[in-house]
Length: 313
Image 1 (spheres, helix red, strand yellow):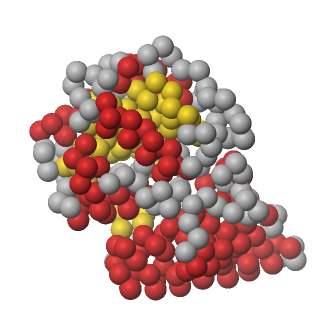
Image 2 (image 1 turned 120 degrees about the vertical axis):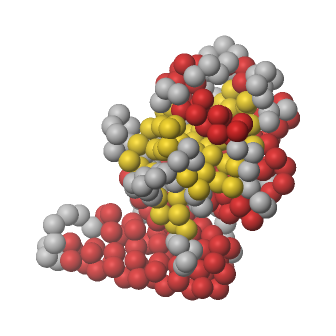
């Protein structure tokens, strides 16, 4: 069952390598009982057995790799079944710093208008900012705030917060649903926050809460380009209508041309570096555009250059 304070934790573990153990240790240091945690296992290789977890932690196997959205939804559903009133969703590489959970829950308890909260994110082992909340511009493009605005108070209103660490009220999921599994990975947290804000919930960043987080882009550069393009165009349309759809599509096509030019200059030895990265970015972006408009959703194509660590999708 969720603990006596109504908190349930869903940790998404990709692979059986045990990267989640340090996260569970950080949760224990914050006073979270193992019985409040559900560990969701997405396979990194076909037939991979679920990892062993500390006593009391429930392990939930998805039987494949349904991506962030599908895996996290499995954990959320289980916590809703358990009766959790607040659900902390975490990826296995997130690390809460001391006091982070207390700060997040404190705001949720005293400011009932907020439905989704996130901590300030810093690069692992440093104080270098990664995200002070997410912003969606007038064209539907998403970006992370890299600095805290002057005069920021206990909570900073945001358009969205990073999906690596989110504290969400039960009422949000009951009113607007779960993550959109068609996205598979990337932009689904912004989409959930968009739906929550339109349903009347505020979304915020709590500066006093800190957590370590880093982008996984370098591990899957082609898959990242594909998903961030396909899903980003869809999200931009949902957020800003026809303007967002047109602007995000044109920007994506510009990026295809830019990266093809980079690859060509490198192939001709007119610029330093190899061609693999810009080529993967160009192909991933182009296929993301095409697949958004032909309605292909879910996992990235397995034959993308730079598919990286999501080849078992």
